[in-house]
Structure formats: C-alpha cells, structure tokens
Length: 372
Image (cartoon, rainbow, N blue to C red; front, side, top):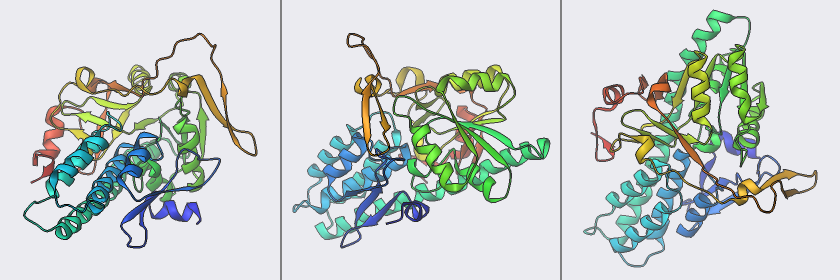
C-alpha cells in the first residue's frame, strides 16, 4: 500500500473483513520505514495509544472510540460493566490529552442496556465513526479559519515567503486528516502562497524532525528542521512571522497543554512580538477545568526516551546511549502555556482570545461533552 495515497485519505482508516477495524500508519518507524498497524481488539487500541503507534490528541480520541466499540464487539454479554472497564483501561493509556476521556465518555453514553447486544454494537460503531468524521471536519474548518492569518502576512511582505514555526507534530499524523496547526499551512500552500516552515526537532522523540518534516516533504512545502532551542534566536532576528502549535488539552480559561517545549516558544514569541496561535478542535477543550498549570495532568514518560536516541544507519534503525551511566533523568511529555502568552485560539468555529469569555463566546452551547 502506498503510504502517501493512504495518508491523503486519512492517517487511520476502517479495515478488516467487515470494515469495522482500524488500520493506522505506525508512527514509531517513520520516516525510515513506512508500515501499518492493525487495530482489531481493544488491547490493540490501548497498545497503539500507550506506545505511540498513533499519537496526537484528536487521533488518540478516535482510536479510543474504536477501542470501546471493539470491546463491546468481542463481548458476548450486553453488559455496561465490561464497557466501563474498557473505558478505564483506555483512559489509563495517556493522561494529558482530554480527547481520550471525551471519546470514551461519549461511547459509554451511546450504550443503552434496554437495547439488544447487536443494536448496541451498531450504535457504538456509528458513534465511533461520528467522532472520526467530526475530528476530520473540525480540522478542515480550522484550516479555513487559520488561512486568513497567513494571507494577511503574505499581503504585507510579498514577494518574500511567510515564515512560520511549529512545535512537535500537529498534522495529518496527529489527527485523521489535515491536522490542526498544519491545516492552515496546507491550505495556504494549495493557494500558491510562498511558505517556509521552521520545524522544531521536538526531543526526545523527535516528532517534529521525524513526522512534521516527513509530512511537509510529502506535500512539497519548503521547511527546515531546527534544534529545539533555536526558535528564540530566529524570532530575535525577525525570521519568524507566525507561530502555530497544537494542543492536547486547553482549559476554559485558555491555558494550553502541548508537547514539552511549547511554553518556551510562547515566551520567546511574546518577548519578540511574534503572534502565537494554538490550533485545536473543541474536543481538545476541557470545559470543566480553569487552571491548566495547577490541574492538567502532565504525563511523565520513560527515562529511556532521553537516555537513548534512535536513528537510521542506512539499513536499519538503531538506538544509541547518549547519557552517562550514573545520570538521573526526568522525562516530562508536556508543559502548560499560560493563556496570557497566547494571541488566539484557532477552532472549528473561528478564532477567539485565549480567555474564558472568548471560549464561551464560541462554545456557549457546550454541555455535558456535546453541543446542544
């Protein structure tokens, strides 16, 4: 299967004999090896999320939704207890991305003990497909609302290209299609606006260097991979027009949890008067939380990710140790950027300030995990 053709349809797709399992691009091996991962059991879904076969808040939510469907599909009893247990297991896979918890809650709500097992299976499958369709449509709209930001810069500085910076991977591979932070980039490129993207390497797993650079290369968008600590230097010297990142959880007051290092980019952008936007679907907003720094759970991952670095020898991937034997390691997966540093939030309903009033202004009809 050609991976470019696959990704253009979506980074995860329905598969299996009945078309009700999932197949996903296995992101652990990109860009060195292009391979796929089958998700046909709830255990597969848990493993895919936990081990970062798939990653990115929207795609984590979609995978969890299908994991819930698969849990009921293989259960011969029409009992909610088993589904609750499946939700607890899936929710334990990664703690920061709120999409995960929203998806499992929606799937639990789709179950009705008064229906037959087959009816419940059908309802849960439709709900999982609906979540996938909603995430895809949200990303498309994020691109449409974010595009004018790039167009306005282009009108000011043409014929020079618009210089953008992004952190980690918030593209097709992190969602289902289009991406969040990359959606406006792809639309601008399609319109013929000259772009250049600075891609943070995003240690320790290098999602920028390995995944965002891979995506931009497939799309033919000029880009340069830079060390994580180079962004501030570029901003000081007027080499960045706009910063756009994704979000794994955004609180009601506008605080944003994203890949570790995002906070430092926001500080540099604020100090150098560079617009700093966060692109996210409403499924990444935690409407029940108002203080991200105090309350967002920040995942701490294995020290092995820092101790070793993985690379391509030309024939195989290999990990090599880069730390002394006796050095301790702390590996925080995310940090929280305070709302005061964020120029605006790009959502599927438009752009708003990173404030409670701004978010409620767009999503005042949000209640109990869904729009009314």
